Amino acid sequence: MDIAVETKALRRVYRSRSQEVVALDGIDLQVRRGERFGVLGPNGAGKTTLIKILVTLLLPSSGEAFVDGLDVVRQFRELRHRIAMVSGGENVGFGMLKVKEQLWMFSQFYGMPSAPSKRRIDELLERLGLSEAADRRVSALSSGMRQKMNLIRGLITNPRILFLDEPTVALDVGAARDVRDEVRRWMAEDPSRTVILTTHYMMEADELCDRVAIVNRGRIVAEGTPAELKQRVQQNSIVDLQLSPGGRLLDTLRGVDGVTAASVLEQDGTDRFSLQLSNDAALGGVMRAVEASGRQILGVQKREPTLEDAFVKLVGRGMAEEEQA
Amino acid sequence: MSHPSAMRIFLKTIVARAYPRFVAAYRNRAWLITETLLPLVGTIAMIYVYRALHAPARFLGFVVLGGVLLAFWQNVIWAMATQFFWDRGAGNLELFAMAPTSLAAILLGMALGGAYVSLTRAATILLVASLLFGVSYSLSGLLPALGVFVLTISALYCLGMLLASLFLFYQREAWQLADAMQEPIYFLSGFYFPVRSLGAVVGGVGSLIPLTLGLDAIRQLILPGTPQFIPLPVEVLAVVAQIIAYAVLSQISLRYLERQARQDARLILRST
Image 1 (cartoon, rainbow over the protein chains, first blue to last red):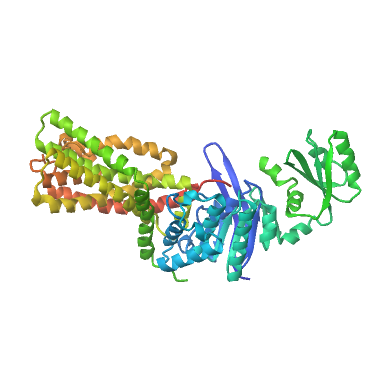
Image 2: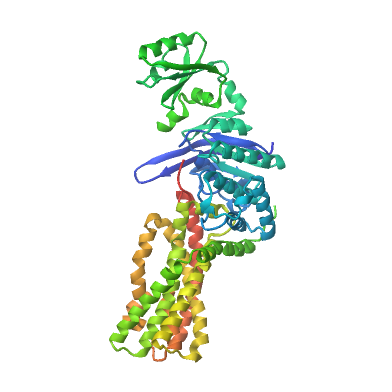
């Protein structure tokens, strides 16, 4: 098996005078060459720390990590020729420069000859629909355009492994779709290319990734294809319950007989509960609990499991709840 | 896998990192006032102080040459030494650090880009103040003075690289540190008076800054009658030694501090 990224018992601790934060706590990971691999988890799970170690910006506290067969600690100089990273919400570069000037500047840090670099920039600008913005100042770009430009920056140097850290965060639906489409297209051009993507958008991981590792509190809690992970909750009935706002109900619902997992998300002034039921009969108990709470039922829907459901089952609560914890 | 040579990447990085500075200077010309006119006014004010005291004419030359070299010191401090701190905040430092280039090349690029503004400022002060106040220079010393100037600037930029790596560690305090260093450096380097006035001990300490000896040597070469701090050949040799020392130290320091920065998460904007 051709391995693009491998970590062994990878651990990273941030120390300050007053506290110690364990960001990664023994990560074992293998990503095959040619894969789109997702690292999924709530904010603060350790995803960015993992990426920053793999792109040589951060040293692990212990354990080992290899990217493209190279040790990230000892062979980082060689490795830097082979990788690129694009982060979501990046505001890098210089607002005074034009888009094509900024992209050219970054290509020069990799020693690219100017003429091929400019050709490649034009080609990528065209592909991502940014040709008309090529001569616009970076400071005048919308966040969607800026992120497409950042993605182009990552692709110009033709990396063997591309790291995307929350690449669609805060983008509108259209811009996020364009970014995902370009990642797919770029991968399809050369089967030896690999993408490691961190995200806390479950749908993005489901749609884009061949395999996913779910990370929580610095540990991998599950790994597999999105279908395999969803399979873990396949035997359960998944019911979404939209209720009027009110007092705390989540723990009550968790205690109802037949409810195996539950999470809640506040949405448009209502509470959207996601319940995993071991059998449909459990719904009766749920309804009685809701009635007792005095809340109004605004909608009930049974649906297919998602990665979010897999996360809730594995961790015991939803991503939003985990981020607040 | 074959890659461009390290030297090729180094040179391309210098040009590429200098580019935004050139472009910024061209596209936003407010600096012509803040970086040229205002320092010129400051220099002229100091000239009037000497004039009011009826100081010998060469003192006006001291001030003009001090004003010229001051431009480069400020470029080193603000456009080089503190830049990693600003770049880190903008997220640029991550991208610089994970590219297969060297941080030294990035710093030299920053300095080169900033030198355009500094050269304009220095030339304006030299020409306008000299013409306005009739400062005259020894023509025979001009060429050697130019040589000493190049050596001094080289040593200064090597010191700037050393300071950049140190400032990266001071993080939020880098700006205050640079600010705090400003006036003592003006004083110790003798920007507006001959360094000999400081005496051997204070002048000796001040000589750790390449500007001190470089400026004194240039003054000795083109302003006849400059009180000699130490003999000219010794000053030139000392500046050459500083180039070597600061270049070596800055390389060691950049490599060491890059590793420490990877250890302590100082290259990145932290978010787990």
